[in-house]
Length: 305
Length: 247
Ligand SMILES: Cc1cc2nc3c(=O)[nH]c(=O)nc-3n(C[C@H](O)[C@H](O)[C@H](O)COP(=O)(O)OP(=O)(O)OC[C@H]3O[C@@H](n4cnc5c(N)ncnc54)[C@H](O)[C@@H]3O)c2cc1C
Ligand SMILES: Cc1cc2nc3c(=O)[nH]c(=O)nc-3n(C[C@H](O)[C@H](O)[C@H](O)COP(=O)(O)O)c2cc1C
Ligand code: FES
Image (cartoon, rainbow over all chains, first blue to last red; front, side):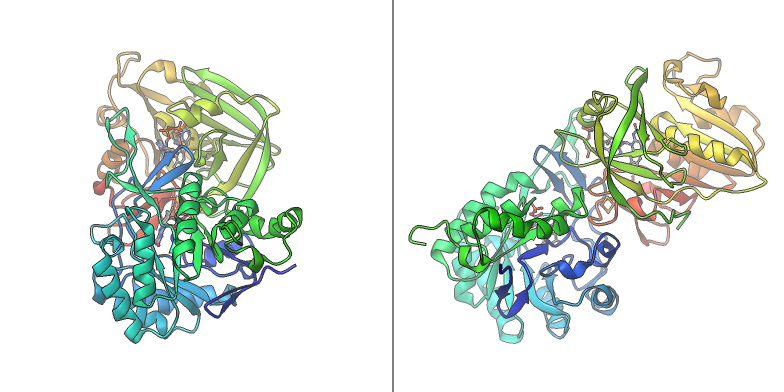
């Protein structure tokens, strides 16, 4: 049975990657299980300067998911490279995916250049889809011109593979994916959170201090599947699928839609062992559906496959 | 960082021994687990039909079971109240830092509303080595389910002899103490942090995504602008440590 996946020359033992923002900088999860079983790890979104993030409450519960408005709290690129990644390296031997956030091309460049020099990083994930800060990059994810300019600029100087994490809050995801491809991106991460809101009936005001936030969890899965499916039809970049994954069956479903690997987000918050359970169950589910090599099912749901 | 238990956080299926109504909308649940936890620590419960786990404090720790006391305030706690004896709950525990126990002090323990339960095990453990005064603030005497701990009681309505919040009570009574512990609604903790002149510890609540440090959904700041996650760096903090004004 083969679960090994090649993502732009980063070899993953299996396609399971904890998603950015739901796994911190990884090392704190080593108290739950041996992190080395993970295909890779996507780190918390990093900006050039430390950020406190948004005021509380930042979290609201929803049916089939949750809303977060953390607002990219992170210690800043220098701390991430100087302290967080070294701590992670002590407990994790594979390369990680560095999630880069910012509000201007210069912000993205500053972080991406620093991560590009970092041996522990295998892929740069450019987050142009954070809905939680005024200039959280979502502007880049919603404008073809800005997105194209950003990717071209990064490609000129960055050597490591660049994956663009796109926002589902657009009217045409395929168009955005094609912009990435044409600008020279190496892969895509589909999808980030949907913009959502909850209102507290007692106070009759939004629960989240920032009013809106990113909706994630199982409710996202059909939307992610549809977007991955559409993008896979039109664009040849490798896709990391993300949105609502809870179990090994969901992983197979995402791969059939066209994902080469997957990221598991909110599920880690409900069950810190979520990724380890998915990895443990994957061979059993592969057997159940007579899948011998995961590489063979990527895009399998498409006509003519 | 206060008192950390050395018990590893685990995810367990725990059997319900009892789930009884104590007062209007207030329930006590006993759970069959020999938990090595500290007063002030909490658990995070997966409740059917709601997505996020619900954090509830441990209110009593015995050899082969522990208890929680919870109030129905929404969908999750309402469903929790419908679980029956011998049902199982998926629980992540123990979480957070507990209270640090002092010795040979005159201790004042102040609880407000549903902030009282986490103080009950604390009082039990403090009583061996300290002189403890327990003051609770309630909306109505009907919520008084803590008789066995013999607290001083003040209520917001006129149901007991003294009417007012805990600060009003302290302003009108002379209590001797040189150390304080408190848990309750944020306005009460804010007021106490300004009012109390002694050292002590407070426990705070916030909406949580995970309860174990992964999502930074619960971050607050110290007065020196350091970031603290309430779930792993708290929920117990030293009085004066946090900047509560942003709440
Ligand atoms: C560390 C800690 C210890 C707690 N201990 C107790 C306890 O011993 N007894 C008790 O009755 N309650 C306790 N609470 C509060 C309890 O978690 C909430 O009342 C409960 O989650 C409400 O869930 P619900 O679905 O009924 O309400 P809803 O309002 O429908 O819940 C919606 C969302 O808001 C969150 N939420 C709502 N109110 C609060 C609150 N006050 N604090 C944190 N999250 C909230 C819920 O977890 C959920 O994610 C504690 C909270 C924390 C953080
Ligand atoms: C609490 C929280 C914080 C997040 N932070 C980030 C982030 O910093 N950068 C990012 O690209 N995505 C972030 N995300 C989005 C996730 O990585 C993921 O794309 C999204 O949650 C959908 O996956 P899920 O349904 O499996 O959770 C965050 C999500 C959550 C729930
Ligand atoms: S609730 Fe997730 S970090 Fe505290």
